[in-house]
Length: 145
Image (cartoon, rainbow, N blue to C red; front, side, top):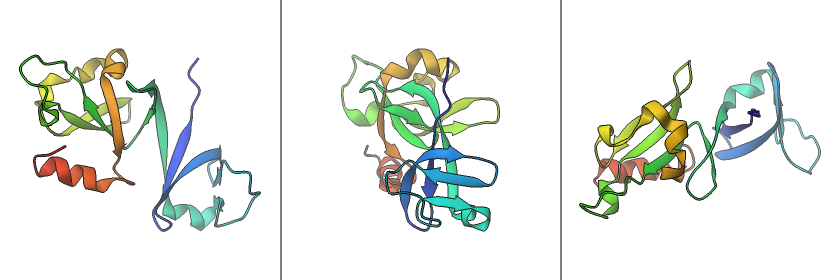
């Protein structure tokens, strides 16, 4: 059975939060520090600074949980080259019906079977995410990875 898990990006504090509690008007962080409104517990207008992101329920090749906003590289085991810039890089996005992979660089979009993401998840390596590691996207745009 799939268990729903979330994390949240705090745009002002510039940090990822491991979500412990989530409701329509509150988010609490998974911490042992107790509840401190504005620091590890947000509600009402305080939530405007939070972007809640869902885990997709899959792990990458290293066993890291994959979530919305993650930057991942597809290891297509090509025999033509093993240079990392040939491997396509994607960002995981939610499209309203499920998860899709947005090609952001490297390789070719057709190299990745995004129509069966769950089946191929063990072929992906999590490189970071678009919030904590935006420089990864700049590297991809400039031809490196």
